[in-house]
Amino acid sequence: MNEILVWVIKTGFIFGGLVGTAAAMSLAERKFSAWMQYRIGPNRVGPWGLLQPIADGVKFMFKEELIPDGANKWVFRLAPLLAAMPAMMTIAVIPFAGRVELFGQDFGNLSITDLDIGALYVLAIGGLAIYGVILGGWASNSKYSLLGGLRASAQMISYELSLILTILAVIAMTGDLDLRAIVEAQNTGGVWNVLEWNIWYQPLGFMLFVVATFAETNRHPFDFAECEPELVGGFHTEYSAMRFALFFIGEYCAMTVMACLTVTLFLGGPSVPFWAAAPWFVGFAAFLVKAGFFLFLFIWVRWTLPRFRFDQLMHLGWKVFLPLSLLNLLATGVAILFRGGA
Amino acid sequence: MVIVKRKTLSFSERLYLPEIVRGLSITFRKMFAKRVTRQYPEERLETTEVTRGQPRLVVNEDDSIACVSCGLCEAACPAYAITIDGQETDRFIEREPERFDIDMLRCILCGFCEEACPKDAIYMSDELELADYSRAALIYDIEKLKRPKSALEQRIGYVNKINQRWQTPSSTS
Image (cartoon, rainbow over all chains, first blue to last red; front, top):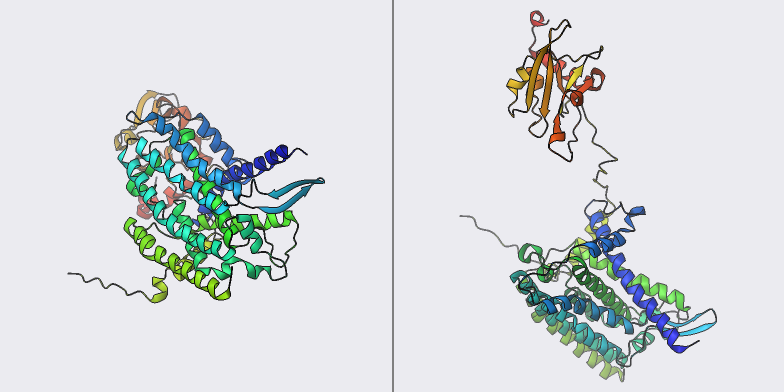
């Protein structure tokens, strides 16, 4: 089959899966939130409320779009796109599964592309997400939006540091920036492939990474970007209709990518416990289960922990996380030095 | 003066993580707890005899209303919700309302009309829902207020029971 056609099919599958996951997350968020509060949650649209995301989408489409008078119209329209785009771009290098063979056709590895500098690409593009948030906050010409945007960007930059440093430790262990290589290094065969997962070698790094992803995606308990009691809605206070929805899709996509990245870096990606040579679909299912757990964790933590104070967040980021991740990197380096080679 | 003693946190508490795990386990367990939501239009609250809903007029067995338009409820109404115009009738009671309007937007469901009525003609029903598209539609006239005695039985029985507390045998009619 034509190579370009294969590539288009894979892109459509993964990209559609990402946006579908974002839609499903909007329902899951409401359902789990309800269950944790003794409520039932949306149950009117379709069986068990499963069609709720479609109803929400239709509603967002038909709502009136408001642009505030003093807003910078061009930037105001651009910001939601900038917020949603980076997450959708970073999904390209996540290795979901190994070589796919379907209907006697070789589709190659199940990921849009395997970049040699995959990890670097994820960090570079992921860092762009800040622009959507701060430009949206600035262009709205509203003090709540501006403060929300500023807070979000300050927070994302501070936590991105420890995020990068923890990833760096994993990269140092593998000796490769390619996410595919990182995954393969965690599943070299044998029954005890579980023990090859990076989580056992980088427990501190894993914990730091997971907490940093919460801050990075502006989720509870670090959701200062939209801290309702102080900032009304944060950077998206002035947004309505589909542009507002785009911010949400962006947030859910970012959560999905971060969950995928956690699985890839620390939990062996598509590696199936005790079954190193599992076929691609089993590996893919294993990946989805692992990533699904982290997506659930995002919601789970939201209803468990209260929001931090902003200075506590900065304190945690700069005075605890940064030294700890540096220490983690140092320890990894020393261990590699003494064991000889990666 | 109040001296607040700051509790010194233990090491595991200062680490946050064990406490976070404890919190997570609580929220996880609560996911399977009993739901308290009532699915309203399908699952309604059960009304009891003390339910004091909207006032309704009692209709006798012969389809006439028991009201004699004495105006006591109109006078008792603290919200001025009731308007009565009387007229003569050939029936034994000689008077009946020509018009008996209750402005349900004014009615505060206090039940004073029920207490004031000397003819047991008005009772608080167990009907609680009150919504319509216009104000005019919420001014209920006789036809909208009429209810057969059987529909109000629960409340009538309760009011009689309460009244018996201060009724002497000689004062019963």
